[in-house]
Length: 83
Image (cartoon, rainbow, N blue to C red; front, side):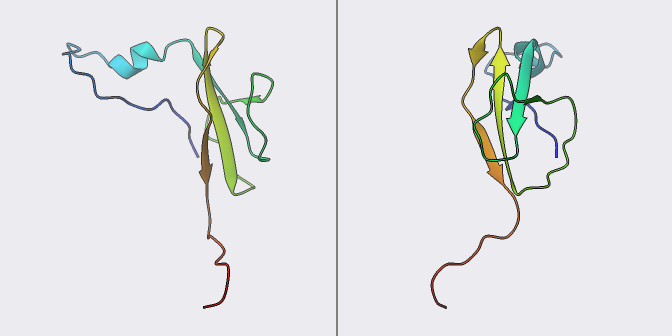
């Protein structure tokens, strides 16, 4: 699995530049796979991650500013109750 900053659609003409890449310069992503909230002391994202669990949480940190926590669950969802 790979993690990257969310790509936004901008209203101005970037003249061939990747505006999202320019804005995310200096941003580091930290993640957890054990259900805990990620922080600067969590694993730093440097490339594709093998998910052994079914959930990953990630946070982007840029110049000491923290973004919101993003999470994703993978796999089949258990059905509760009777059919």
